[in-house]
Amino acid sequence: MTDLMSIGASGLRAYRDALGTTSDNIANAQTAGYVRRTTRLAEAAGSGDMPLYRAQTSPGGVLVNGVQRSVDDWLVEDSRTSIGGAERATVRLQWLQAGERALDDGENGVGQSLTAMFNAADTLAADPTNNAWRLSFLQSVGNTVDAFRTTAAQLQSVSDGIATAASTGVDQVNSDVAALQRVNEALLRSREGSTNQASLMDERDRLLDSLSGALPISVTLDAHGAATVQVIGSSGPALLAGPLISPLGVTGAPDGTLSLTLAGAAIAPASGSLSGLTAAASTISGERSELDQLAGQFATQLNAAHQAGKDLNGNPGGPLVSFGGTAASLAALPLAPNDVAAADAFSDNGNLLSFANLRGQGGTEQGWAQMIAAHAQMVSAAKAQDSAASTRRDGALAARAELSGVDLDHEAAELLRFQQAYEGSARVIQVARETFQSILQAI
Image (tube, rainbow, N blue to C red; front, side, top):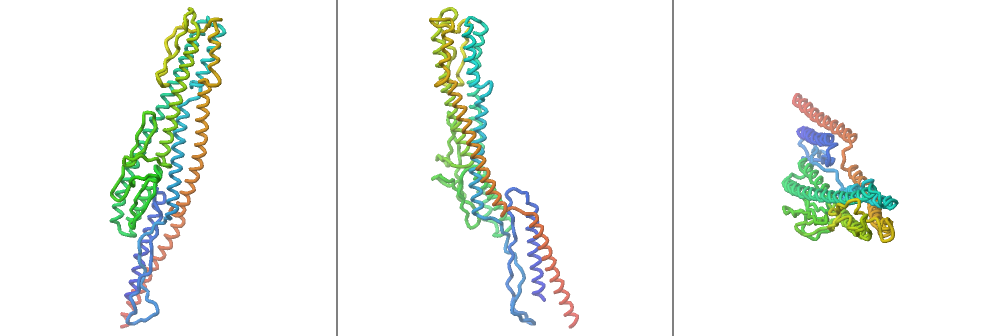
């Protein structure tokens, strides 16, 4: 009778814990990073034969062997790899689109301003003594200079934004690694199979997912579940190994390019948001340099063409713009309408007519068009990459969630099953009590 009551009591304890675990699953169904748990139940060892009863079996009840998380190491690793690829593609596309907006190929952009300037020169060539059209031509030159300067400032702003995002991302990585190190320490002290250990492992995996979104990482878990994290492709120290943390850093060059370091050694991650930021920074840096070259070409060609002619007073034409080496330094010089060198040695408008030679093959207009076309193609390719990487990530996360996520219908069925088992265990104790009372009354 004592064994029968012990069996019932063990069932009450075991199914109470199982009900608690199921309730936790239901309560955390929408909690990010929560992994479904199950209570491990096992048969308790029998106590042997009883004095008044001998049988072939010796039931001993049920034991709780801890809480088990529903995880698959391969699915977890695959999801982290896909997260890194998707983050790189998404971040790179985001900043390339910001660069596209900065280039501004609209009405006030460099391309249309150049076209408007050449059109103003053609208009003035039709009536080279018209003071209003001379003023209009000078204004169109000023507008083109403003377009170059504005574009340079906007690209600089994009470059600064990338650098800020990279700095924030590096700070987040270092913060996550420090938090992960604390979780590792807690895991070393946690009891095997406990709910506390499962919660710590959930937090560990959340932090590892966050890190994999920033950098490509390889993870090794010890017997306690504590993680050692290495940056893939780095030959230097581990990002986290036991109590040792290697700090991640980022350095910006004057041209806007970014360099990542781990414990002072340069690294070049192939995936993750930081990889996308360094790639975007390199692209924007190249376009800033190309814009500077176009501005220099514009200044050189325009000044040479204007200085080849004569102004309204018969004096040689002077430079129209000044250039200090960058598009941001480009400036329109303060000329009066009479200073426009429209004439050449043969006619009043001959020099302006020669401005047409600055267009077409090798001209600034064509260089700008090629720059815009190249960036548009880059953005288009980046969109395709982002779509493919996002699809792969979503599929990997869905496969992981199918195993680790909480299905409320399944949990409701489990709740009913364990409730019935709990009631059955209580009934066993009741039967044992009634039987024991009957035996005492019969004595």
